[in-house]
Image (cartoon, rainbow, N blue to C red; front, side, top):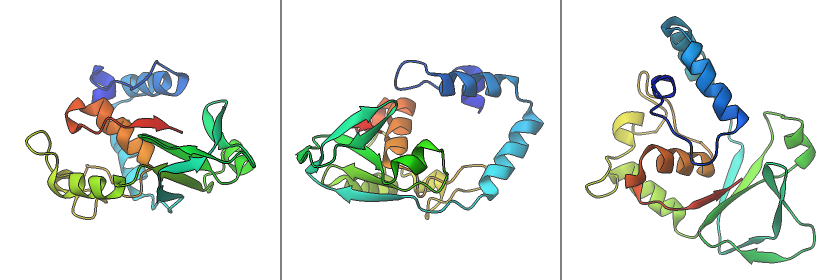
Length: 173
């Protein structure tokens, strides 16, 4: 929130309504409101809603407004260096059901690369994630949990927050 307020937090793409709204909310929020929101959100116990699949090929997909959907009976296509997150039930997702489930297709080796980043950081560029977010990545004090976050969210945050991570993965959701 402090980075949103100060303008230090940048986005990976062109400004969109959600990001613009978040910045406006952060700039208008008082310290007491931010603390209350942090306490509330840190008390929530998220349920897993995403299955990560390492693969070289994915179902053919298309953009459906601001997210991707599979093309029925269209075969597969190479994943390349993308992360492709697909809702399992399009109607449930479109109705903003918080219980919507996703499959995240990631390049082979992504899970091991993420585990190394969590445990050791990236050579001299970053520290291990667990140093701030805790050994189980469920947060420490005011540092939020990152356990169970979607792969595309994590990559966006890492590549937006610090170009030093060297992840360089294209994200598609």
